[in-house]
Image (cartoon, rainbow, N blue to C red):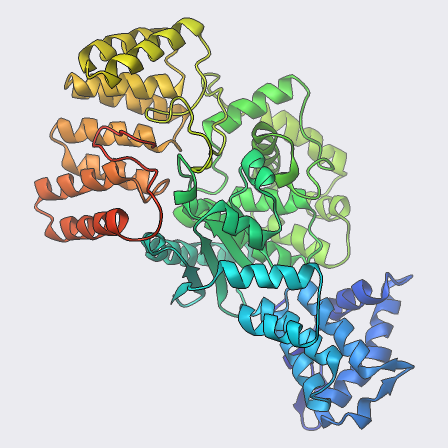
Length: 581
């Protein structure tokens, strides 16, 4: 909904005017405040009888006496209720209008000052919010959250685009900023095209340098982050994302930013009424739209969905609530995303992209999730679900993409395979060959190690850690085409593993194809922009191409990564990917 309280109660020739449909949004706020009415008409009457007289008095006369009491409720109490209801809908400018009216009526009103503290927090003015709350002697979870946010964002820098303001703390994370702004502007346009949503003000985006900082401000626990792989969140009318630096392998960080922006759009378009399966389904389906790939699902997610459908062990929609971040395993989280993402893909395939906006509109209009889906589907929910299952069973998948690569935090104990790629080795003999190869490589016997890696690969070519090792062995032997083919086959199964893009880039550069190598490393930076071997590779490719500007960009990035920021860097030091990739 695009209107605000400021537009609802504008003065036009001495009259109050309400934009068409705005009463519905206020009705929802009042339902949250006063409880559900027996019928929609009662919700409207709450606004007409209680809220309109109050706001008319506050906004039009500014007189405390004129709005001292409305039907037995103090004006400050109603203003506090309404303001908090608007904040619950993330209608922050509207809540600001309410608090300004309350303060104009009585600057010393503690209810107005308390509401102002909350509004300041939602506006991103964390220090001022904490000052207001402490001046009132506030205590409790909200005050603690504000204080934690003040601490976590101390020293943050900011950079703006037309619609977004990105903030970051660690100097190294500046490498993310331009790409973040560019990707966010593209997803904003894609969401406007598909869902018709345009934010009413600049969207705040915060990049946190560590999982500890992210959990402090997000209300998630470290265990939930580690178990589910939740690395970003949209809450309190802002996007919060953990830097890829905080993970061992990196992740598709611009897709994550896109996903979180979509949650903002979904929340606003549904008036906060979308259940988690609708939220995650639409966000998952559209998260790749910024790069022209809506509905994209990874090979491992497709294989997982097929296996769990065959086993009849899907996650129910009810089990996904209140958050997929609270599911017990990374596999269950991946499955939940695959389920609801393909549900929305099926809906779009059968009813068109307009069905997504129609679904959210139905929720905003008061329908429950099943009824809203049935309205755009044109049949019972059970028929939709049966159709989706039949459709999903026809999706092609590669059974070799059997591993779910869970998020691994950089400050956790390193995985045994950290130098060459993640994932368990399903064949014990292949594991033995791989471990022997690792020992030989550690002792400088690279060619002997390559031979052991080849034996392991012959037994389990679909294991990404084994494929990475085998490609590394071919690189050592300068068998460029062989290394490239191994990397490309593994990337067909696991396109989100940075180490495999590193192997491909090295193979292409060795084969005298610097432009293709640079493209591979550019894809790697979509997963881990802090990857030192990739940055060095891009510099070498730029040198071969005579690209002086490209060389300077990588020199600046390498200088920042090696000298700037705080703490150690977990992302490797050698061209062949020594260290954690």
